[in-house]
Length: 174
Image (cartoon, rainbow, N blue to C red; front, side, top):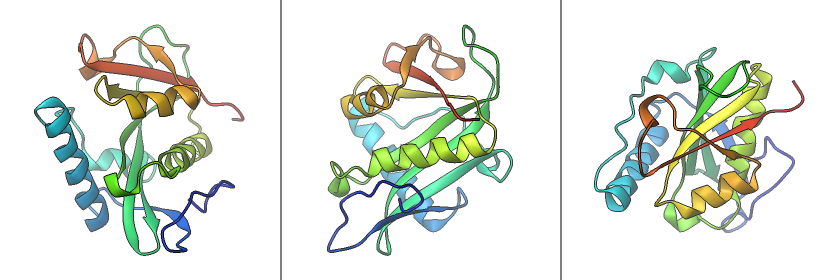
């Protein structure tokens, strides 16, 4: 989180920071397992949207882990994506695996991760971001809407899903 000018409240004096990691880094694997367990509780099963670890490799996307001191507490990633129907053309990326461990929520960590994802994508030449979240995740919906994301039609894997909420945002400053 130190990669952005904002700071979130740390734990016991720890300053939050974000590090780029491989999708198969042990901290990333542990946190992705946690978010999948949360999906099971909220939706009755894990997120089955197809993901290939290579989509987050340099030049294809990025995967980040957020830390408080040495503790991995958050994840967020983006991958290049085709522009969904109805959106203006231009380089597009999809946000994936946004997550903050339950015991570290309500501290601004998700907002810092979102800012880092947008910053990284903008640096890579992305013009707009898209994402899908579930209707049973009101805190995620509130985060994205307060961050300037607007509802868009369901796309790809999420087209027609009655629990899916899809959003998009144009990134400025390219």
